[in-house]
Length: 254
Image (tube, one colour):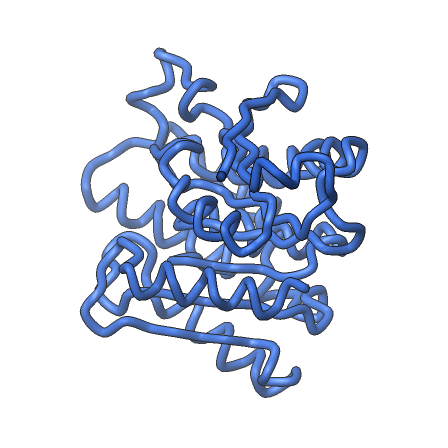
């Protein structure tokens, strides 16, 4: 039987999913991060499939999402996108500490992945934490600075005022450079990485991830990088993409 337990890592709500009869046994661990305007419960199908394969899965709630939503911020959430991403990257330290202290995962066997914003967070986290064994990006983009500039341009085209001065924009871009995996690919350190993206994605353009992978494959063991694009998919992971990601994790996080 698959069990879902809710815990709090300090102020962070988190679901833990795993086989009930393995409660007291450290298992291969996988932290799965949800997307923008989503919530931890929305990715239980990933967690269930991974738990069936013997993993213990951790689903944390991102800042300003789900239980952590603040009413006054709902209409302004778009302007907080990168603040949320950066917050999630920092909070991974607390989540890893909780997992370790409670003996929930096998030592040196924790992977990280997510969808959309969660995938973007994953790619940035790879520049900060060497304990991440494998990374999974579903509709993500490692080019933080370029993607942030693209977002600002798109918002401006739509007449949306993000409330940033030019000086504030430059400060944000500078901060994002430090987390931009495309600018420091050596920090991947030959760790296995899985990319899935829909070619018709209008929200997170596929070009950034594709260019990164093409450049990376020239520098590292190409067998460590798996890249899958779906010609008909938009900004939603298909059933096929879901299963490919789960099977890849099973093969690479051992």
